[in-house]
Image (cartoon, rainbow, N blue to C red; front, side):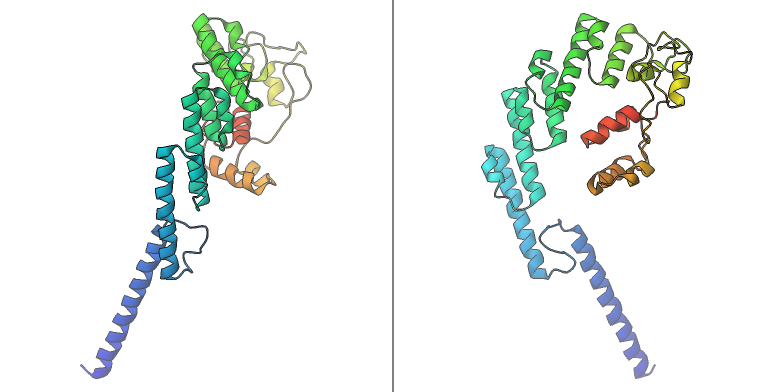
Length: 285
């Protein structure tokens, strides 16, 4: 074999090794924690090391803050996501420790705030819910306390005081021993739909206008006689894309893309306004 062959082969091997090294380097960049202060694909090794050092320091501060229950220490964390998580976890723990439901409102995260209220409401009373200033949190609190009270006293009239319609329907269904998807009056509206829309599960034509409840609803009219329905788009990909608020649009797409709009998936939605909208407009089979 001549010298040109070996030279050509060595060049090929050199290029292959260089490419492999580059790909390994790129892969290692992808595995690094994201630092909002730098572009990890453009950063120098020194900058990456500095970012890694900052993150490790932040993580150590996070652990120390949680151990000492120190919100002031959370403020020294440079990573914004980690700083917020530090605050939220301490605020959540403090609310549980105090057992004061209004302390839940101090939490800087809507999902944790709601979770806090729902957990503390389980052992509370409806009177205790009234001190909450946020109407959505107050409704969540009242829904749980009335639900528990109705079951304890076996009184359906207490179920009817529950603000959240899905929970109200579940309460009535349990106490009356009625299947949520049964249709006692055979009007095309099952029990769950009747409760959500305020119609009578035992009357085919709640508003007595000559049209059955299910037929009115399917054709865009209100079956309880208060005018036409607000015929909003169902939550789907087209609805998400129609939103003008970019942050809400992104959240909507992330929450609903490929997910059926049923009770299970609606209740997993983190964004409170989308969660409420989903529950009111979910596909009812």
